[in-house]
Length: 394
Ligand SMILES: Nc1ncnc2c1ncn2[C@@H]1O[C@H](COP(=O)(O)OP(=O)(O)OP(=O)(O)O)[C@@H](O)[C@H]1O
Ligand SMILES: [Mg+2]
Image 1: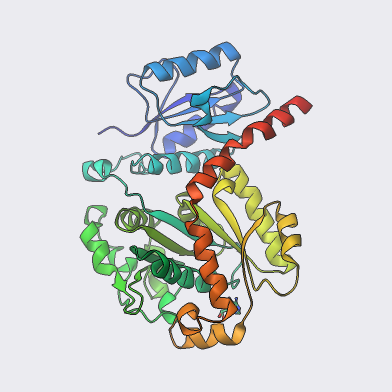
Image 2 (image 1 turned 90 degrees about the horizontal axis):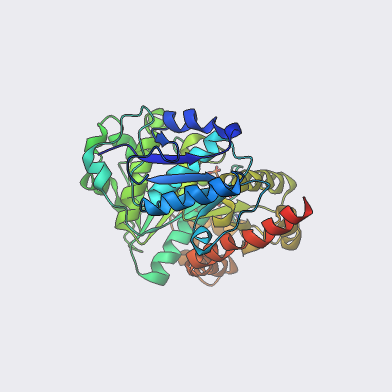
């Protein structure tokens, strides 16, 4: 099967996208030059209106494709069809564009192209991706409570929904979920790292997965030996995430802090990102920087802010103001209980179910299950009035 193809219809100044897309493994077509319907399309709203309309009509006639609209200074006439498109506000750096397209490919049920340009094998190509919901727990800064939240959120989702839930430790090299959750995970992705991608099968991932007996939560880790960490590639993590999504209703990913490629991949492909903030200047500042980046990458609409240890320091209202985003959930600070539970390998919510710490964590799970997709779609649509007012001020 062919590599994924992208119809690139942009103004001349954005031709810089072409080499970036090729390196990322996409075939790039000019409008009118495509032999068949492209896999994806990128259309620049700053094209002149006639050209914009022509490109849209030709794309529709060829069968259509998931489209990324690049918004600049001009707001073209948009119909119902455009309201379903993905939107990115210019300027958009080439690597951000590539991440957006990769996320669109995954949502369309396609595999990612290999960077070398040697497009993945037939089996990977035809594999459809399941409907599981991926929640990536993230903070740019270490030590804010990501792992505590990931573990307890996963167990709470399992208790509340009784569906298949996977806790995925993607904090490669450092994370050790089994230090605070008594799950018999003796193997991890590092054990597959030396196998070729055709051996990254469903059965192989299943073999690496263990079950937390008390809750029925399933657990997949990157491994245990920091010496293995370099061998756990982005591709292996993505393959594991695709498998995880196809086999579970909920996948909770505990991430490494910061912006390394592995973490960015886990964020780009998440249905929802929980940004964990603590009420301190450093954490709030780092989180604001992340949200700037998330807006550029088109990830802000799927990001929700969770304030951990919310009863100390900067107020929740001030954190929401500083971040320009409402706080979706708060979790009270309770060091003694968090430590006792962790030391016993038990989730706080089962060890101390009556504590506010536990009820807050359960409430976070309820926030996550409240139809985020619908809310995200509504938020996405709200770009239009915002943009219209920006453009009328210009
Ligand atoms: N709400 C809370 N109240 C009290 N202590 C907490 C709370 N949340 C987390 N902690 C404690 O804070 C410490 C750091 O938490 P955790 O390991 O979950 O953070 P992290 O963001 O995953 O860190 P890292 O970046 O190192 O992976 C742990 O000792 C944990 O028990
Ligand atoms: Mg952690």
